[in-house]
Image 1 (spheres, rainbow, N blue to C red):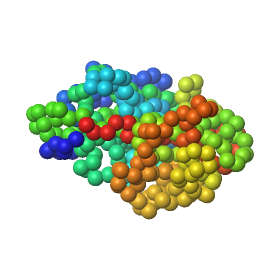
Image 2: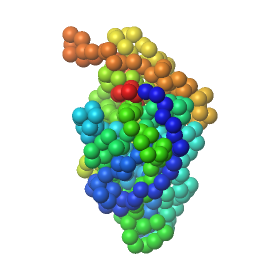
Image 3: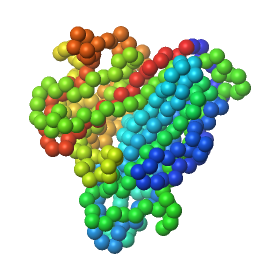
Image 4: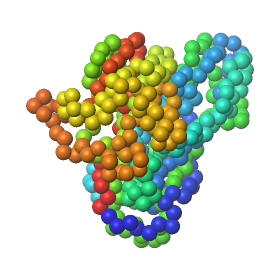
Length: 365
């Protein structure tokens, strides 16, 4: 695909707001994203107030914190050119926040910096989350080849599945109450803005950018609760290019409301001897310690991931051509593709590992 002339690669514009309603799915008014221009990504800000009860309240946030009010974020639509429904992003709120920190090498907006849990204390909170539709940390020229082509989609939607306070705080007898930012009334909200590419009328005609997707799979049960060596933890998606695999390890909360997910604590010591295998015992990436992958990201961005997170980036230095080509991988006699993550596990109750896959599904055309 030839590079098309751009006035702006990513100009920030407010789109609309989504009001919080516990344990429901919120959408934008009109139920779809703007369809008139290509987009670099989205920028969400969760804001509201949490007021502690007079007694019996929590004494701390959970490991996922207040951003766990966003249980799931999903962007999807029907692409007319490819004639199929597509999910571009499906991730949990806390993981979107930490991915943004990894991409930028700095902490995104997270207020307040410290919380008060005393009786009747009020905490006004704001958390920023950037969701790129393009491969992060590559050149603007490359990113221009992977913009989201909104005009080619039918019903391109942003869906925000909300959790509730049980996902955000440690144990309590009486739950904190939620209201609008700076107020004792109203509700929290998600402010939605978009990063739009500008090129003038007709400049995008005849172009179909490449497509990048973000998805996740969580591993729970005996694989994570039993101490074992060389555990095959998760199969890696095939059929495209794997840009990166981000891993999150910790202990799941057992007190969340039905249908919601949150971590009570996070740890860097659950997994070791981590391998990405292409074929049995054929490691294409290997780290004896979880910290090696964390420190690799520090060398690239100047910032190590938060506790519990690590990232295996096949194109960490900005050369997108180094993304792992998994297009030709297919199932063997066993019916499964031998492209997977293996690790030694230090088992304990309620532990889990979450794997986030960044893939290039379609090349520019």
